[in-house]
Image (cartoon, rainbow, N blue to C red; front, side, top):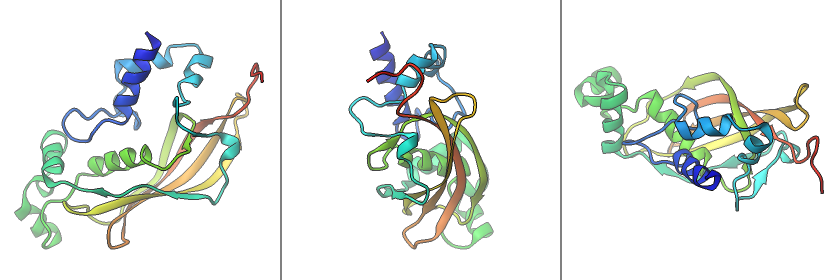
Amino acid sequence: MWEGDWERTQRCVRGQLGRGLVWCSSGAVIPDVLQSVYSRPRAVALEATVDRGVAMLFFEDIQVGDVTTSPLFTVDRDEMVSFAKRWDQLPIHIDDDAANAAFGVGGVTAPGVFVMAIRTRLIHQFPEPHAAAIAALGWDELRFHAPVRSGDTLRLHQEWLSKRESESKPDRGIVTSRLSLINQDDVTVMSHLDTILVRRKRGPGDVD
C-alpha cells in the first residue's frame, strides 16, 4: 500500500502544468496522498524524502556558494492562457489588447502563480543529486522583475546561501537558497529566497 502511495506522490510532484495541475510542492493544496505521508510516524515520513533510485543531497552535502541550473523550459501560449482562464482571469493574462495597453507589444503575460508553477517544475528537473527535502518552510523577498510571455525560454538558477542545524531535531537541518528564473535574454524574471528543511545523513537511531 505504501509503495502505491509513494508512486502516486511522485506523479503528483512531477505533474504537468496546466490541466490537472496539483500544487504538491508549493503547499498551496495538499492532496490526500500527501496527507497520508504526514500522518505517518516521523521515521517513515523522513524515509519518503529519499527518492528511490535518485541520488540525494543531504544537509551535510550542501555547500554554501554552490550553484546549479535547470534544463530549459519554453512557455506554451495555450497552456499559459488556459491556466489563467481557470486560476487568474486578470485581462492582461487572457487578452492581448489589454496586455499590450499595459506593457506595450508582446501580448498576454503569465500569471505570477503560473510562473511559480514553472519554478516548481524546474526544481524537480535539477540535475542529480536532489536535495533530501522534508518540507518547505517559506519564501522571502519574492519579486517578479519582468513579464513572462509565450515563447520565452526559461531556466532556474539556484545558489545555496546559508545552512544551520535544527536545534530541536538533530536528524535535520535548515537551508536557504536564492532561486532565480531567467529568460532567453538573460533577464531575471522572478527571484526569491527559499528555505527548506533537509534530512541529515545520520540521525538518532540510525545504524550502519
